[in-house]
Amino acid sequence: MHMASPLISPALTEQMLATPLFAGLPPDEVLRIAAAAHSKRLTAGEYYFLQGDPAERIYLLVEGRLKLTRAAADGQQALMRVVTPGTLFGALALAQAGDYPVSAQAADGSLAAYWLPLELMGFVQQFPALAINAMKIMADHVQEFQERYLQLATERVERRLARAILRLAAQTGRKTDEGVLIDLPLTRQDLAEMTGTTLFSVSRILNQWESQGLVKVGREKVVVVFPHGLVRIAEDLPGKKE
Amino acid sequence: MHMASPLISPALTEQMLATPLFAGLPPDEVLRIAAAAHSKRLTAGEYYFLQGDPAERIYLLVEGRLKLTRAAADGQQALMRVVTPGTLFGALALAQAGDYPVSAQAADGSLAAYWLPLELMGFVQQFPALAINAMKIMADHVQEFQERYLQLATERVERRLARAILRLAAQTGRKTDEGVLIDLPLTRQDLAEMTGTTLFSVSRILNQWESQGLVKVGREKVVVVFPHGLVRIAEDLPGKKE
DNA sequence: CCGCCAACTTGCTCAAGCGCAAAGAACCCC
DNA sequence: GGGGTTCTTTGCGCTTGAGCAAGTTGGCGG
Image (cartoon, rainbow over all chains, first blue to last red; front, side):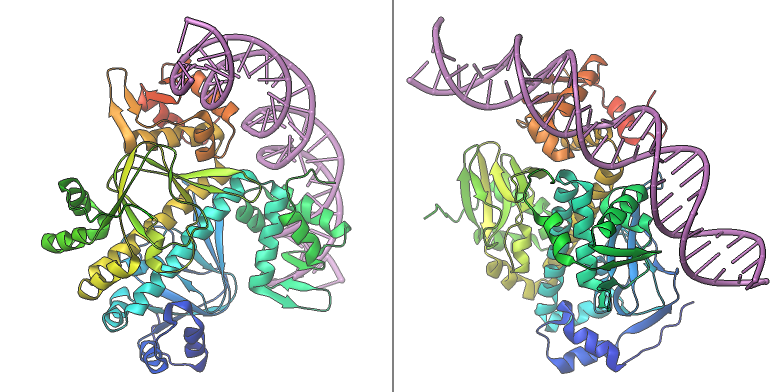
């Protein structure tokens, strides 16, 4: 029902060696795990899994970009995370319980490696570091969401948007002659779902920033021209805007 | 510098057997782990740890109630979680990295058992289930915060407050003749920090609910009189309020 | 090159709920 | 039991940003 080829590409093993999950493992051991990987390629718009699917695979993105979104009962969505190559997703499948809490959609043509939890847990016996690493990853996630929860609760839209743009620039940014391009197609709606606001507010703020020379915007495109300006918006202490 | 007595009280072992972290372990093994526990008793207002402290202990609350809060740089706070007996806190210390992301304050006289990560990780070698359980706990946290993030982003204050009250009632509720008392002292400010609003809005909504017979309120006190009414507020689909 | 469609912009209106101020209630401690 | 502290209530004004409508832009397929 899906194309699952054992793949031991240089790209994959390279990604794996840099992935926190496998940090501290002997490189030849990582190769053995790589050999056990399956792979799946998707084109833009397709899904690796949907929110609510049983969580039975741990994925590692090798190429492309993903959007992880969570929908509420009434259809409202939030864009929880953008995934770039070298990053795990669906990691909670390691806990061997429950369903995926988000949907994972390819924003581009994408290639991911995956394992079944049982396959990885076999290695845990010999390398407890794997378990520790997995916990670190999850602990990081908990912290990240607590942090963003707090920001959503206490900060204004403009600041949250500035943070999101800076985060994206750091994560997916590509240098161009205009500035740092956020290298995946994100609509205003997507940005709104990342920051807990509406596409209208995102549009207004981006245009205002553009007129101040902080960014350049286009259709599904944002280029950060003057990062420091955004940092000021994101970090400056409470004081009224001037 | 602190009172750390090995304690093997019936209360502790009972809590431990019911704690997800130790689920599936042989009971005599749980006893051995219990024997390795340290303990610490606090009075209301004291802290087990502060946000930013190095995370070097995993705690299990045996008696009392805690509030886990996270503060932003500008002093704004969010109340992330209320801890009741039988629940772990500071669990991210298991990942053996980083600092506590929240402060853990006793809301009552409280007793907690704790271990050092190394002590527990020793047991992991023999019982991989421990590692799986730990991951399950963390995965649950991730999910919970994603869920609450989404709710904060998409729902109105009244609904979020209804959810919070119902959650508290389920978690710490005590039956009285008036209804279900939320059995820990929570100020309007605390409730505001749980729901991402202000104490004013909390006060107004609670009083409105009281006049509708849904709850009874008092100083640092909320009694749920008619849970179903709150459920309707928390769950009813989008439609305008009537 | 044309037409369509999705994404985006922008003006306007309005409600939710924030924030302040002032007053009132509950509790605690000496 | 007096006095002070903390918590709570409530009225009011005002800002943020949501929501809607109308129009514009840009890209893509035919």
